[in-house]
Amino acid sequence: MAADAIPEFPFDRPTALEPPPQLAELREKCPVAHVRLPSGDVATLVTRYDDARAVMADPRFSRNLAREGAARLSTTEDGGLFNRRRVNTMDISEGQGHLRWPRLLGRWFTMRRMELWRPRVQAMTDDLLDAMLAKGSPGNLSAGLALPLPVRVICALVGAPSEDQDKFAHWSRVMLTLTRHTQEEVDQAYREFNAYVSDLVDRNRADPGDDLLSELTQITDAEDGRLSRAELIATVRGLLLAGHETTSNMIAIMAAMLLAERRRYEAVIEDPGLVPGTVEEVLRLDSTLSVIGGVPRFITEDVELGRTTVPAGSTLIPNIPAANRDPDKFPDPDRFDPRRQNSGQHLTFGAGPHYCLGQPLARLELQVVLTTLAQRLPNLRLRDSADDLRLRTGGLSGGLQDVWVTW
Image (tube, rainbow, N blue to C red; front, side, top):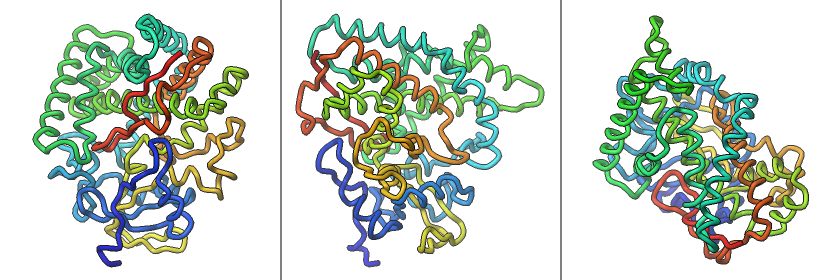
């Protein structure tokens, strides 16, 4: 393939909430296609549901891009979050190292345990909404609810002070850079985040509580050495980063998607039983959460995908927004249908051994927020036109800029 024939990726899109039309074109005509990343390197984009799921679930596809020949995503020297070499920590993205992670953390993120958190999440949601309403309409839903709620929740779960939310937001956005930040800024963010978590571990050890960090610290101190200090720091950093960034973005996206086509929101007001199905359709149809559409993988052997042979040394990106709109999996895929029977089979939380550990918590937060908004703010509307919504750019984590609403 000639260099000038390889399209630049990520693709442009018509509006913030609509997926790039190239994704549907590739899924239909060239479901395993070369694209050029912001770094200038070439990767292989996978756009059909079955292929994307295979890439996610097959252990031959490695999430560790810190190896020779892997495509760099970011314009920084290290190539970005997935290319960065891990020093003195277990690789919690791969093999036995990854399998230890759900074993250690899994019991904290079960559906049953998350349901026990529902009253606390509800109280936090009501508190933030009260403050937003007190300021009067219009209000910034992103700043008033979408960002602070997941931070409060994950901080309570992990055992970190929620007043540090601005630090988490800054560090995570720098670490998730695609084109926005320099290597020096990224390295400084890692140093500051690691120092913060290290201090948090020490304070928690001195005064343990009933939280996840207290339990993980005890595991670290255990004689069998199931978790080293460096591994503990990496784990807590990952929880704080993942526990707020994606869910914060998704709350704002959910509000925008439902209010942009307001009959979706009105349906939930009329029938609160549609809340779970509405959340699943939002998760399935969103195309903004990740700028590149999925966690990249690297292969060290030739692999067949559909009718295409993908050679060893390729970096693949399973594009979740494209896969989630595959008509072979989801009939009439662009239609928003909260009663869709298989909506929950979307790939937004991954698949196989890398299925998102925190998905019960994310689903709970989205359901609580939607239920609360529908009950308390039946007249909620976007302040501006849906066409005026703007994407966050320059990072691996996408999402929307401020979502302003009226009531």
